[in-house]
Image (cartoon, rainbow, N blue to C red; front, side, top):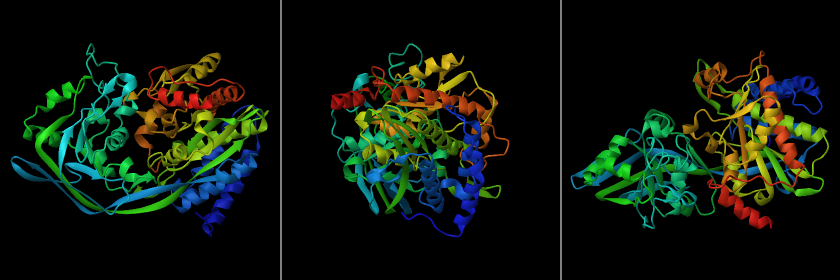
Length: 549
C-alpha cells in the first residue's frame, strides 16, 4: 500500500515538528512520563483521523511509527528487511436481506435477521446457501483434552448446524457443583469465547454454528450484537477458507432457540444441565432443520504491522517481543458533532510505551537476546495484525521467548499499589513481575472483570495460541478507582477518548518500567518462561520446546 502523500500531510508534518523538542529529553534507564504523554498526544491528534485501518489515517500512522523506530536506532524487523509486514485481510459485507427459515413438524417459520438470529460468513464468497440443514446441540462446543472435556465425542457434524451455549461449562455453576472450577469459574477461558466456538465448528466439519445468547454468559445484551451486526467482517486471508471457516456463523436469541428444542420434543433446561457434565454427548434436534440464504460482498484489503528490532549479542536467534496495537476506530458515527475516534488511551498509550521501551533498549547495553518491537494492525477488528503474524511469523515463534503486551494505560499521577494482570496465573511471567513489583511495595491482582475474557481479546493472544508466553498488565485498570470507572463509562471506544493538556503519565510510567525490567531480565538470560501445568496453551509451548531441542 503506498504511503499517503497529499496536502493533508503538511498538517501532520507540523504535528511531528512540534513534538520533536518534547521527545528530545530523556531519562537514562528510566521510562519518561513526559515522553509517554507526548507520543500519545501526537498519535491521538485529529491529524491521524482515529488511525482507522485501510484509511489515510493508517498511512500517516505507519509513516510516523517508522520514523520513530528509525530515529531510535532500531533496525527494520519486518520481512526482507522492511519496516512493515503487510497483512492480507479478507473482508465480507452484507449485501441485501437474509432469508432464514426453520422447518419443524409444525411447518416452516421465518426468522428475522438481526431480531431473532444474527448470521454472517467469513468465507470470501458472494452467496451463502444452506438448505434444510439438521440442527445438533453440542453443549458448550468445547474440545479441551487437557481438562478432560470433549463435547463432540466423535459425532459426525458434516452438513449440520451446531447450536452451542455461550461461555464455559463451569460459568455460573453453583458452589459445590461437580463442574465448579473445572475451567476457570467466573473467569472466561478461550473455550468460552464465541470466536473459539466458530473455529472449532469448522474443525469438526459443521456447515454452520449458532451461539445461544444469554446476557450473563455473553457479558452483553442482544442489542450489543445487533448494533454491530451490519459492520464488515474481517479475517486474515486463509489458504483454505472452506476448511477453516464454516459457511454460516452467528448467534440465536435464547428464547428462539428454546422454541426449537421444544419443537424437537427436548427439554432445553435439562439439556443445559447435562451439558455441564463431561459425559455429555451431542443431541440432534430431530425433525428440525434450518435453511439460510444471504448475499454478501467479498474482497481483499491490506493493513500493516510496523516492526523494529535490535539484534542480540550472543543469541540473536532468540526473541523477546514487546507489542501494542496502533489502530483505533477511525472516523465513524458522529457523537456530539465529533466523528474522530482518537483512541488516546486505547491504544495510543500502549504504542507510546512500546516506543519508550525501544528507546531504553536502544540506549542501554545491547542484550544477549534480540528484542523486537511491534505495533500491531487492526486489533479492534479482530486482532488481525497479530493473527496474520502468528500465521506468518517473521521471527520464529518457537524461539520467541515471551510477548509483553501493552493495551491501554490510564493517565494519572497516583501510583496504585495494585497492578492488574490479565490472565493472572496462566504462565510464570507474572511471577517474575510480582517479584519486581514487591520491591516497589506493590502487588499483583487478577482481572477484576474476568467474565469479560479480556485475555483473549488483545494482540498477545494469537501468539499465545501458538505457545508464546504472554504478559498483559493493565496499568490503572484495577476496577476500584474512579478514573478507570469513568473511562470505561464515558470514553472507552468513544470520540471522547482524547488526549488533554492536563495528562500526566507518572503512574503508567511506573508500570511500564516494571515491564521493561521483566523484559530486560529475559533478554539477558537463558531462561524460557512456561505456561502453568494444565493451561490451554501448555501443549502448544511444549511442542515448540521440542522443536528448539
